[in-house]
Image 1: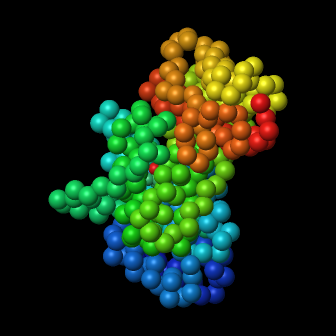
Image 2 (image 1 turned 120 degrees about the vertical axis):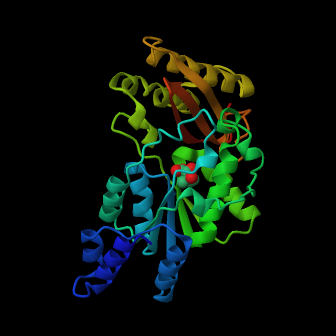
Length: 325
Ligand code: PAF
């Protein structure tokens, strides 16, 4: 723990006359940056009878993260947020160096949301010298974003396993925006017998529908307006599946939906001044992520596009009746 943080923590504990809620609202949450200090704080919370809720993040907190923190808060648990930009989930050409780092604002947001403890490890803490072990996810990681970001989900699975081992939470919160990540983590905790409950919270959107993302900060005003092409495309697909019909049966109908989503991206994000590139637009089974072959049951419409250097992802879940053609 940073010495000034310790003083602050001690000060926090000294404020006996304030209610716990008042105290949390007024003071910045303590920050620990070593596993030893983290374990000390968590074991203190556990001995006072609290359960532990965990929200892993890479910082640059926005309303999407805050909704996860609020869900954790509502469980009544002691809430730990980690802020760590994990290098192993970025490919060499990706935005690791540019990824927004906004610790002061993040800390204030955590205070406002009532977070109990922030964990900000550095690379040496998470990947000790000589580090060589990785958690390799299965087929869920080999589709959609996995095809365009090789090694990404291995990096995510590895760091989340380490964070789970350090925090040992009872429950951990992830966002549906990263739907593939959430499914991989759910599978991973089952497969590796990690005793944590995974909660997945709904996507938080801007008023015009754009999914909240730390990467939205990269968009210029002009790019921001074209970024809506992704959400519009997903809505177009949803509308066809739920209301207008796909104009084909089974597989063919799904293909029509995919074409319609691709066309909507092209239409909404006009090619000027720079083209929007589609990594994928797809309709998949919401649990297995295998391509949907029939418009039946719970499906996910998902997409990833690149606007300039910025890669955006989004998805919509829909439930289709079993007797649909
Ligand atoms: O979703 C994220 O922000 C990251 O992938 C996570 C889960 C914090 C792991 O680095």
